[in-house]
Image (cartoon, rainbow, N blue to C red; front, top):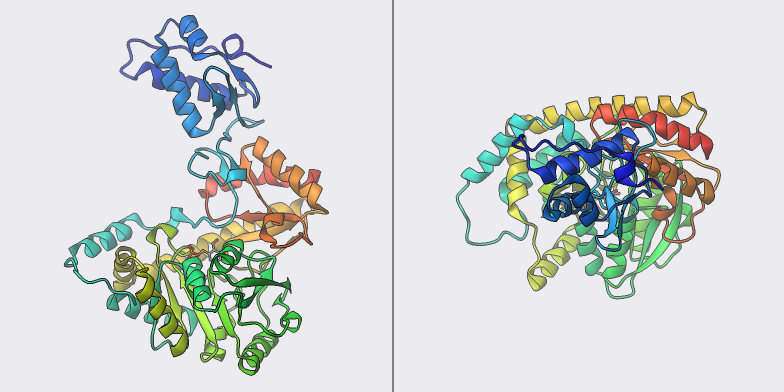
Length: 457
Ligand SMILES: Cc1ncc(COP(=O)(O)O)c(C=O)c1O
């Protein structure tokens, strides 16, 4: 194992205005980027390094603390500090821990796990305008459990324009996942709720937390296999626009069959339309909520269109379901926060959201094309419609999946294995490649690494 002082020369400039601790942290980071430091290398103690560099121990301790916080190194001062992950090649810099979902510390990792929106195309001027407009609103004393009127009107317009759904009444939510939790809480304890397998595990957890039981239902390239739904369900949660994570679209035949069964068997269909606005080939199929407004609770979110930090979503549901959610809010005092609603409403007011959506589709369509081209070039099989913000690259088995994820992490790319998207044992292996999150240049830099590790798998 390399010892930093032997391998790495960090030059500190005492005349510079930059604090010595900052210079030292920079120097160590550079050493990792250039390959002089490798994952697993042990750093000298802060005391030894201080003596060697002729600085006080406060300086080295502060630099180590900084690197620890960023996730470059791990361990404890005193018992040894180790470099965690660094790239094999120059350029990409690994840090953070994809396995623990620690995105905040993943400062320079190219993060290709799904679920992060494309911030790069958000027009900052429009964003600032919307926040300013939101700030101009008069403070209100009373909370609004159903959501602000301006937000609800904006969503009605959005649904009509972009999803072809005439919705008379919209409830604001704090996002799709929290709406699933709210809906699940309206069922009696032990109610059986069908979920897609593989599927969105946060929805699964929300259902379980509410005291309902989860019934996994298989999916294929045509989405949820409606014929595989058992009887006796209280609700079925699904992602018909773009099955998460496999990326199929629920066929028209299955849509009709699902709504028919829901009516006959009196269960609620929860339609999570999380990135339904993002298709790059054909127009979206009619929403389940349009086919069966009497049996479908439709969920939308701004998380993928803009950012989850707005914390806004919407629910369109039959009157009894709306009333049950409202009742739950009244009893618990839980309600969506209005700040993000104001911003969303302001963004729609002058066409900024529609412009953003056009840019987003264009950008994500191009990114998707780059991802599938990189996979095709090396003969890796993938699945997923021309939609959304991820594709699934297939691997032969769970072992190959684990190896690919670890190899990519070692080269500064965070990948997401398919296994974690199953509620039960995984029946398919691969990685879910999210292409929206990183800046385009980083994505392009990471694609050769992805191709490499997948081919090796
Ligand atoms: C299927 C699905 N639904 C919903 C969400 C998140 O929505 P929200 O942030 O509104 O809870 C995600 C995020 O990854 C998702 O994958």
